[in-house]
Length: 243
Ligand code: HEM
Image (cartoon, rainbow, N blue to C red; front, top):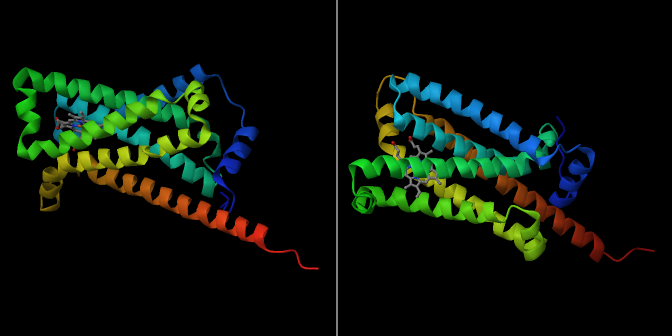
């Protein structure tokens, strides 16, 4: 594992890609789908052990957690590949992890709305004081992820231009922050119960919040490293050559 600092991200990315043999899109997607299914089964088993029962809520929560994990991994790959080289071969899965993560989020929202609509009036349910915060954070996250998914293609890069396209994709971190706030709002009461003495396995959200923090910290470190490098390069070019 080698720490690689001081190379602009785009250059580093192109260097990794030039050394990697890229399988066809369908193969990449198939591998990510198999990975997602494995993560789903692990989470499902954990939630089953924690709750001691299986119902549609457990399925829905497992789908939602897979979405957070896939999207988080997709974001983390940039930082991981910038600073170290152990994850280089996975950078080619960044787009597919994000896209499959988005479709899991769509699955979660559809299942949530379908389940709740059988018992409640959805407007009353989500507009209530205690639930509005998790509705609005979830809904905004989903909208931003949908925009990102819709521009994850060559046509959009061409139409928007590389710079604007990358800028729009950066909003993904805002969406990831909103999704994190969403699962904190949803799970907080359970977390408090566990911390104040509830026996049993910890709520999954406690582990995922650590993962989410890691994703954000990695992004901040990447931003700082890239800015420092840019400054260094511009200082080098502005220094007159000594004779
Ligand atoms: C309109 C958008 C959304 C709505 C209305 C919504 C609604 C809900 C509801 C009602 C729950 C509780 C389910 C239960 O306990 O049975 C929940 C849980 C959850 N949601 Fe969403 N959601 C939305 C979007 C999202 C998005 C975009 C993500 C992430 C990408 C997400 C991630 C989660 C997670 C991880 C949980 C599980 C929290 C826990 O069990 O502690 N949600 N959501």
